[in-house]
Image (cartoon, rainbow, N blue to C red):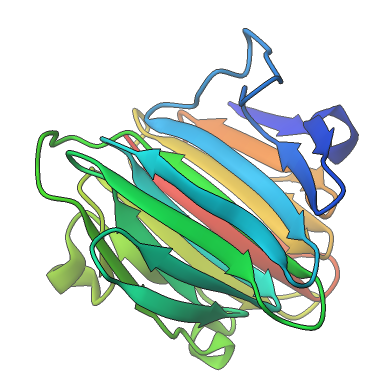
Length: 232
């Protein structure tokens, strides 16, 4: 089953400093048909204005993955962690028993990013945060695992859930393949470029919800970048 969710149908909130599109119900946007997809609970497509950001706020028992598309985001949390995550790179926060953090765009230009929340398999553990550079060239023509519930095996950032966050950079005409299980759930977005997923076409920033497939083939109709979560 492949369900394309056009960008124009996503939830939308424009706060001035933050222009957010919600793939799933979030904050004031509620759609009973888009509450979650497997253990994937949130996928926000955010544009954060220069010199602005999210003031300190708390989270608990959630795996929060931030994929920066353009610009950079600067993180600071109640554990004393601080870091700047730039375009193409990833940060992960395991909220665990509770953490307070702030996320600011300190750059001179807007920052765009995906913020993805995945429900953890393990609760009540100490919170944690990490970031890592993932050069775009390392995922040319194929999916690279960025965050994983089995981080040592995948050489990726750690998340406390049976899921993998992957990305690929494709030239027009290239294809990337992903092997999975038919009982699992995938959610895929191409921030740039038109793509075809197992024969179904999607435009840039459309959401593609997938289940029941054992192999996922993504064909780039234009030069494209693809981000996908494969979860239980």
